[in-house]
Length: 148
Length: 159
Image 1: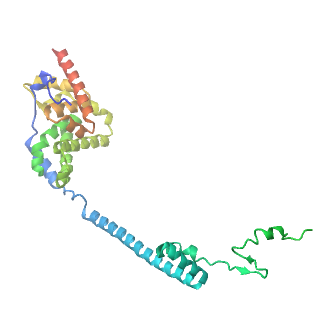
Image 2 (image 1 turned 90 degrees about the horizontal axis):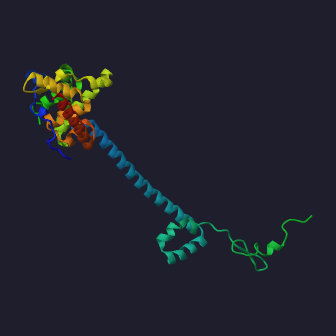
């Protein structure tokens, strides 16, 4: 940006700014001196509110962490109780722990400890229930409803 | 910087600026007082102010805007400057030349008058003028260029 005054007309160069009257200075300064200066960056009340908000946030985060931990522990206890009640699931869990490690199994706890439907062996030696293919194949040939 | 130092540094310049903006020495005195009341509130925050001179002119500019808003005569702002006001703002070789300068300034728009005063008489840079008037540096420079063209043609015609 060109800041020079080479293009200023000659007619302007003979003028100087006129000073204001001295009594105006006293009048203005008296009025301005009665004004209390604004506080610093924030007033005391604003600082207090900011500190209270910060405490609330910190408290909420800490409370969330504590509650989450307590909830996780409670869930773990519940899962362990359920797995102990089911010998089959407990056996599965032990096997899985050998393969995946205890931590992974705990994460998958809900699947490994889900109560399974007991399988039964029929008189003819076939197995029915979960894992049997009787329902899928042979029972498909047997009509389930009486034909009219 | 304390209030009295602030006044000694910028008080007269702000007064001239407000006469130019408001077209009346009485209104300019009132608004100068308002400007310093406002500046007094910022004395404690001066470390946040990059250019105190531009800031002081910005405060005066805002006070003048509030003045016109209260008066609800914003359209009259263009026509407030009379040639005889030049003798309150400038000191020339004689009264006739002061009146002639006043006529020249009255032929300009309010924005152009403002830039001429701030640049050629108060010594603000275009950046500071832009900051004081709320326009970009380029706008301030362009207003100054157009004002100079009009003044040159005005004085050329008078010769």
